[in-house]
Length: 149
Image (cartoon, rainbow, N blue to C red):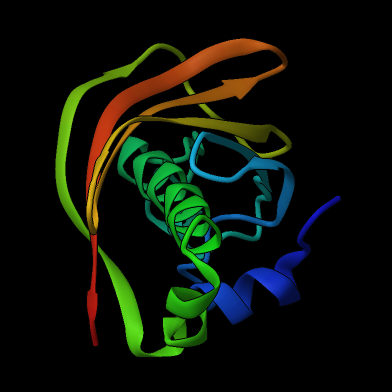
């Protein structure tokens, strides 16, 4: 384990119920990251999606991938840039080629595999996959930008 949820909260501004990553297990600065979220029936989203057939929404999976990508972007900044990181935030710019391959249900562990496909200054482009039990359940190309708060 590289970062637990307390460490992640020092990097990202997200908080319960919208912090969608529990741990970061691998990180190669500027290249790739692996994190996970344990999906529990106690998630507030399951009250309405769907009460008798709980499915974790695809948009929440995409947001979780984006949050893990945000950790990668922040942790890949230079030391000088990291000193000013508390005054920065990552904004989602686009989602392309999103595909949902299988439903995610309570009890699943979502593994987020994110890799950098391109970086220009403050703009990051990621290839993102979410897996459950080694099987891809969602994938997308994500673009984000680090900006001043």
